[in-house]
Image 1: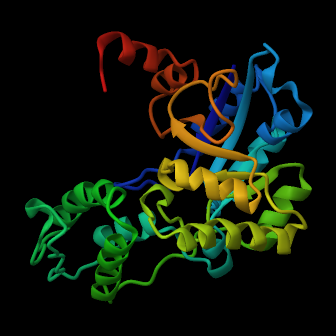
Image 2: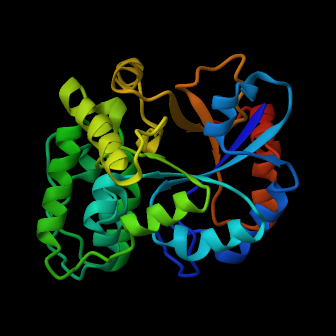
Length: 305
């Protein structure tokens, strides 16, 4: 049984829409988890020990935020803990955040009130002719973001393009790692894998060439900087389907990572549907319940979905 713990942003700055994990909480997590047998997931697969009955834990990061190198890496070094980092290659190459971050950033920080998001494919409550106040904009994007994770690639990009072109008073922050940072992590013994080229929602893309581009271009970009094609693809927003897995295999990946908030049993689940337990910026008692999987057991017991 393997507990794969997923992190995204580690940062002392607070955020209303997607709060990064605070640095002291992250250190508490690593100190606690490192009491177990912590390994790199890729090493575990390569060694063949993945099917042994030992209880393992792994540390994983998605996206490639600057906080990974600035705040997380020193704590990992302090506890002699190796982690896997899955990067969005276009975001690293161009120092632009993922679309999920860009969407929230625009609605939270713009002062533009005449944001027009009025498309037939949106439900009526998400079609807007303007959002006058910051609170209106924040409440709106809280509903819009999860919906956009489920629509087609083309529809999502249309909404994003409209929002970005409307919010002309903003400049996107430079918060992603550089390739030099990524190489630094690799040289410290961490593993670097792919989180796609542009953070495309792979399970929602129907064009096989687009899926292949997301997967292959990302892997080749990592290979050009690090000298190897990555074993692992972390599916953006946990989205994948049979076609995604088929193309992952074809282009050369060996492992596919989902989310699912549960412990991985390699005797029952494919290496292309590996679940991870995402940890958030919450109280320590609730975080500890997630780490031990007690929270999910409670939800299952009471029938919570």
